Length: 169
Image (cartoon, rainbow, N blue to C red; front, side):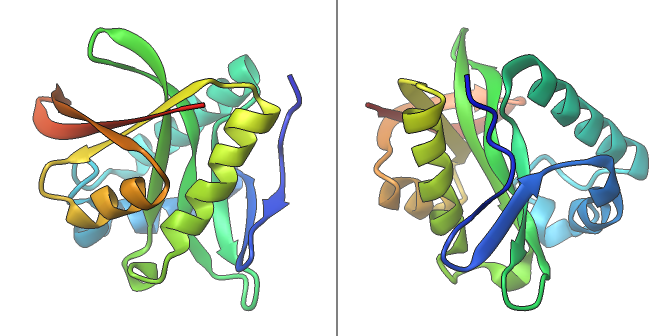
């Protein structure tokens, strides 16, 4: 398996999530608006553990989450990537993404997702990727649909109702 580290999209630069991103990620994880659909705000320690879990995921599987920055001014935009998860009673690979609120509605989540899916399917040879969101998160549902995900149904994840989408090559 080929390890994918840094890559670019039309407007963004991506690097693997590292401990050096703690402050930026913590600011995002403290934002109630951003975290409303991601399980609520996280403490410094929860964010640090989130990063450590991601580092471990990278070591185990050769993929994980990336930090995305705007190419023009190097501003932190958010995080996105592929990670193993357990949903509907089985192990899956999930496309996960979260953006700072000021970058919502600009097509960046779709841009990130397109490149990550290409990496997942073409370079990592993953055959099926899932994506899920709270049933109230219409913006995320639109991103999934633009990326070609097919609606699978409602699930309970983290004790909350979610919509599950799947993409198979």
